[in-house]
Image (tube, rainbow, N blue to C red; front, side):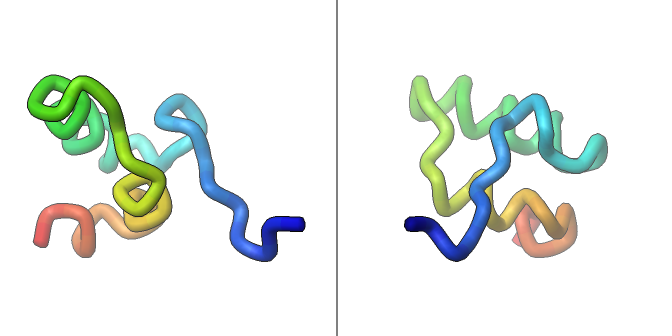
Amino acid sequence: MSRISIPTVDNSVEASKPLLGAVHRQLGMVPNLMKLIGHSPAALEG
């Protein structure tokens, strides 16, 4: 049972979607850690 919900890219915050899209273009996928950090666009930028 997962205690931390990992959102999909479509369910992430609007400000994080372009950043997650850039990760997807570079890696071919979006790792779960990046999806989780996507809750905070400022943290994802860092």
